Length: 220
Ligand code: G3P
Image 1 (spheres, rainbow, N blue to C red):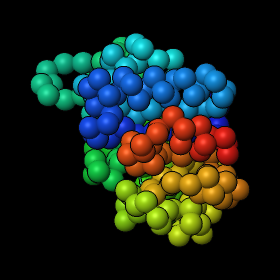
Image 2 (tube, rainbow, N blue to C red):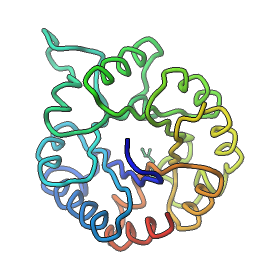
Image 3 (tube, rainbow, N blue to C red):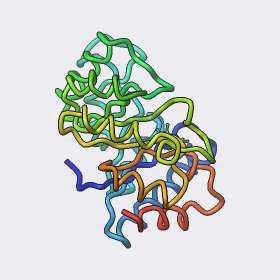
């Protein structure tokens, strides 16, 4: 388990965070983590994950892993392969990669077998409560309508839903995401009890990701 609060940047599949740019962005995160002592992780696409993980010492997560074990599964993402490539965990059920309940259960259980830390995403407090039943290592609350927003954020427009999510999370550390783009978002969320952040736009589209990352994590 990682120290909390933790800042996790989800690279998604932006041009600024794939290929060579994935390495550059990963090195920035590694550098800021080393220099500030803050807990920082990254979520990287499956193609770039191996070489990124070899280059940095911060935790690297896959954007998804499948409900499979070793075997005849062409085209699937094997959790054990992700772990051998150097990742420490996987992100499951993100709004942009939703899973049906049975499949999610399978993905969570296969990831656990491969000793991957599991972050499971929920879109509302009701889902947080349901998904806590799968005992992931982290829950991530992200209202889908706020993902990618550069104004409204989960912290400034839905603070009550953060409180509600924490109440029903069964003690599982809760990350928050969707529109997080200011130091105030970080401060408010921590005050409400969030244990970390799952962020994309504020870093991946920043003209100066290192400066902004330092700024955000300084509030943790
Ligand atoms: O996984 C993080 C993400 O969905 C939040 O995205 O762009 O609103 O920071 P963003």
